[in-house]
Amino acid sequence: MPSRASKTKRPRDPNLLARSVMEDLIGETMEGKPLPPRPTEREKNPAAVALSKLGASKGGLARAESLTPNKRKMIAKKAAEARWSRRD
Image (cartoon, rainbow, N blue to C red; front, side):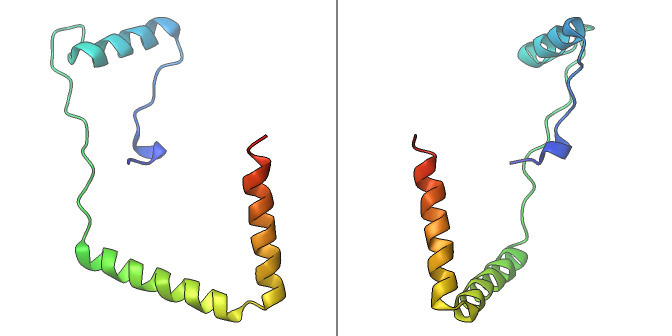
């Protein structure tokens, strides 16, 4: 999914916004020119993905080992309260 920074900005003026939406729907500008193709998701480097996963798994284990049982319990309790408070 593209980041918000890479998304095109929509005009704030209602008339220009309506025009922009219509151009997106019909796939061309009002002058009859086709719209440029939208950027597709870029392909990721498999080696970088594997390295990232390796680091993430090590980091989680290292953090779990460094926490005291009391601190782990406090984190779990806070997470459970956050989950259950959203259900109301």
